[in-house]
Amino acid sequence: MKNKYLLAVQFIFTVFAINAQEKKLSEHVILISIDGFRPNFYQEAKWPAPNLKTMAEEGVSANGVRGVFPSVTYPSHTTLITGAYPAVHGIYYNSPFEPEGQTGRWFWESSLIKTRTLWDAVRESGLKSASLIWPVSVGAPIDYNIPEVWTLDKSVGRITPMRNNQAPKGLLEEMEVAVLGKMNPTNFNGDYLNREDRTGEMAAYILSKYKPNLMTVHLIATDHFQHEQGRNGKKVHTAIAAVDRAIGKILEVAERSGILEQTTFIITGDHGFVDIHSALSPNVWLVEEGFMEDKKDRGNWKATFHTSGASAFLMLKDKKDIKTLNKIREKLKALPQNYRKLFRIVERDELDGIGADPNAVLALAPIPGIAMNASSKGAVLKPRKGGTHGYFPDFPQIETGFIAWGAGISKAKNIEKMGLEDIAPLINELLQLNFKAENGVLYPGILERKD
Image (cartoon, rainbow, N blue to C red; front, side):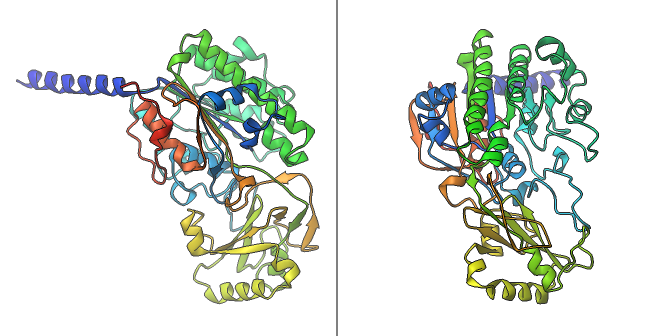
């Protein structure tokens, strides 16, 4: 009797698995994040990105994707793989706020994510995943993983921490023999475009050999050179060309491997970019008023601004210290107009609305062209150049892009606006992962169903 019961249960689960398999719109989803990706890279003729432009024309593209606050890399990438805002997933900034002074640590470990990820859902579904240079992925439940990570020891390069945290052990060495050559700080360096080539080659190798159902890939060159030269620098043009070439390597290997018809490419980013000319240092005001000291550990502090990209978030040593908070509000509102016009105060209710760090009591969101600086000494307003991000995501320049192409995707369709949190629900539907995005919504018009 017991054996008959077990056979019946096994039969039910087998039927369920077959039905779920039949419903899948895609066998392989490649989620590619282009750091600092902007819609005009695939919308304007001047940008050398033939693969991106072809996929945008043939598939679904967006005129803009609204990001999270602050619009910086690590919280944005975690929203991509959770469908949740930072207040839910717990990765509030690139670097966590450290009350005793910033050490330079970033949010590297996936154990810091407070909610379920697409990687979790893939593993729970019995499928396979892969990831390359993705933020907050150290120790993640990924079958083939080369995470983005480094150490605070400046004598140790970027390659060794990646080796120490790869999964499975030996994966990077396997790829060095097969396609890369020996990795070193010269041939895998964010200051040069050969890094994008190698990331593309790693992704192509893993897709060809292991055929993961979900692959997450992070390409960084467009961010690096927009920081250096601004939105329209010469190196930004070569950077988007290098990114496009890396994507082409993955496209080509999908075709060579005979899986292109069952593969979906989703190409997005984490934020746009804004050219800047000046930086504001609000901690100088706090030092002047005696709320903190000009010391690495902030000395005997009551309040401090934690800067993240272009914006600054006010932290209280004692969150119940309303007296200090009110004094800071008074200070900010009493500033001369020549300073006050450079930013707006984002109060807690608005921070809650966009899912920002619940520990911040307020934030300063600067106007385009101005960035916040963590300095607590010197002039309040200093010159800056190049570009940055981290702004409140309520204007077009800071929005990122979106392209979906391949299996299960509609043809030649444009979406005016969507949110970064809306991409995880799309991947869930393509792979039938039984994944619930806390804040995202599925746009069914992106999909093309055969039934």
